[in-house]
Image (cartoon, rainbow, N blue to C red):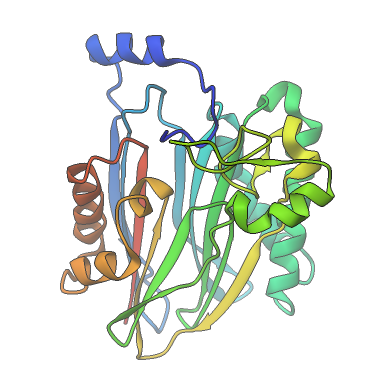
Length: 290
């Protein structure tokens, strides 16, 4: 089963829209670069709507901001389930919440974790407007082309190409790996034949934003990683699990290490994931340094 949340609705409406050619936003692509940083940063992205029987639920961020004399590259992929309201909210607000933390410049890791928690609290408190669904997230903040801060909840992943080899920067928060915590909090993990492990038989990740009905057994605490950017760091791939379900880290890195245009690299990866029969939404950002 490809859906992250079992029992997702909207399949019939999705098929009608496909037949009527009303889903013109089935893919999104673009690129850009930091113009004022002494260390060049360039990015490209490509997103493709999946064939799981629901509308596109992935959102991305790829932008640059000048703040307090620094150049920030802000990149993220949000993979929603049970609707797109939560990932849409995250797209517009999560980075603002992180940068508004008073200790961001002195303690980025603490600020990122605090902003993830407060954002999740807001989503839960406003479930009437944002709906019952949730979203995974992988975020990357590049500071002056010199420092990379990566965080994630769920199974969207960041992989860096360092000295020509793949190195996974994020943790896949799968239910079976957090079974002890989930059961201690009163929940359970199902492992049914032909399906992936799920929290309370529903969600295929152990950490996410939102998901009010499961929150007593679901964490929104991110794993955070800092990587100094030097000449050994070539590029980073951020992608939703629509890519990683059908491709290993080293395969992805090897496939695009010779492609200097990050937009072409992102499109190459999503195209290959489709060729490998990935049914989920596929979202990919490639960030190149130097």
